Length: 459
Image (cartoon, rainbow, N blue to C red; front, side, top):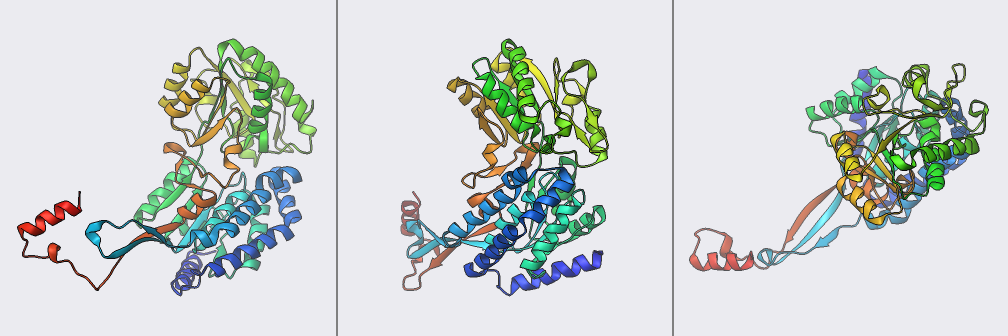
């Protein structure tokens, strides 16, 4: 799509939004119902596209992509009429007589830019929130997952007029053209480097944004943890989608006294979950492309390899890898891994853990395996991170009852459920002042009596 075509598309959406057509709750509900039916109808095609792009199995595709989108739509359909209502708030006595309320209002024309690692869920979930809030949307899926992008375009073009919801495919040229446009809200999921570029462009129009980025999410395991259960849940979270998950445990930070036993349990869990030949496992995913395949291989230090390491360039698969005796100065600890490589580091004291984590860029997630509730409270209170779990991984983002988002270098803003509706909504604060009484105290000429009355009202 050319720059002129993108400009015309945004102009058509703005004109359509200004008609007020997206405001009624019935309009929003009917659109979400169409989308729900389309996702259900095309589930097999969506899953096949995900298999071709990322090697995902049908079960994993439903669990992590289509199922989560359907759940988000269901949540919005159930709650949307309540969300769109005006909410009365208390009015100060000084404003008597009047009615004060907050009015939820859509921003307008929104841009949703999504990544390739969960290309369906991370495109459709924020779209659901944007539509529930009454906006129009221009959707830009990743060029790295072309099969899924094609299915997304097919589904959305059948569900919505492009003046309401439109899909722009392509790569950097299209991204650049889109970011030059004046949107009313931008929602971006992806890398920190591109997120900075999005933020720079948004600043030109003072456009509010949500950035869902990533980072090196620690997985802390102390000496009181159930190591067998911890290993099972860590292996699930780390190697899901071949490690290409923004909230995957990036590295294990383990108490020195249980490190060897934890590694033993992890190696057993890798074999139990993925088999003795993971590269031949049809349910084990693949790396998105050769560029990332080579980048991940470059992070594997053969001298510290204690499990895995085999790879297959023809299928872009890398076995689940475990690295031992890793330090924070090693190359694998200098960037987000975003692949099936798990470094293991050690600590001696929880204070050391808190100090180290807070000295690094804020991670998107933090996981802590422990039986010590006091220690859990200490870690969750004093460490800065987006969200996380105690004694599990990943699952904190799989509920519409809590917002999911980053903090500091891992992003800003959040979505899912009510938080997602709020993200795409501006709440207007309105005072409806009555006309049957007009107190004179605020008008000049000021009088001593009026000053006393104002001081009384404002206490």
